[in-house]
Length: 44
Image (cartoon, rainbow, N blue to C red; front, side, top):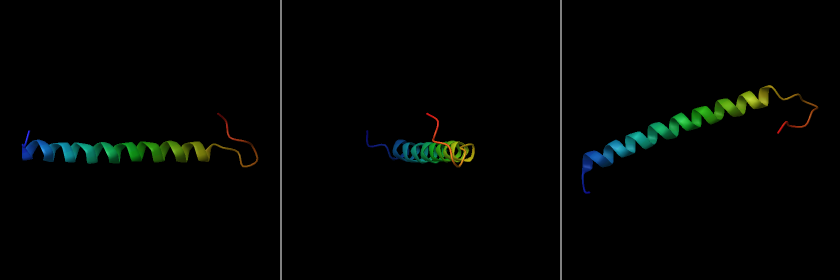
């Protein structure tokens, strides 16, 4: 289990997934905020 290459691949994969998830979530949040009318409550 003490394989340094496995640990490195795991770190790179985790960082890539974290960046991808944060980009997707920020795009979804911005899209939801853009389509919301200013005087209307949020649509669930």
